Amino acid sequence: MIQGTAKELCPVKTGNLKSKITYEVDEVELKMREGSNVIYDPFVELGSSRSPAQPHHVPALEANFPAIKEMFHNIKLDTAKAHEIRRATLGAYIERLAG
Image (cartoon, one colour):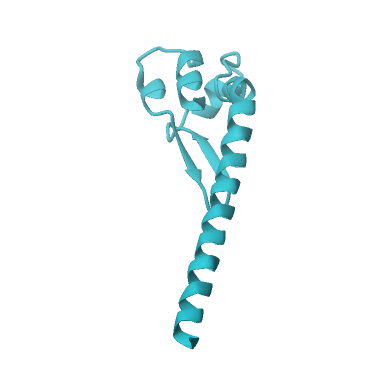
């Protein structure tokens, strides 16, 4: 999704930056991080006094925003279902102990 789009849009000189683009999703905190650990990535994305901006992260986010929003919506639904199942299981267990 977003990682693939960012890699497609990433300018390539040596391929290092493109190969280091990753993403992770925290389903508990409902957060997503996409980027790289390459020190010059911000200068490529935003530009510098020596080179113009070559955005790849922000356009990837914009292009994939509807899918990302849906993914987090589904995570919230799955979490809610899991909580319902746990509550029902716990309730049945308590009834069995009491009865």
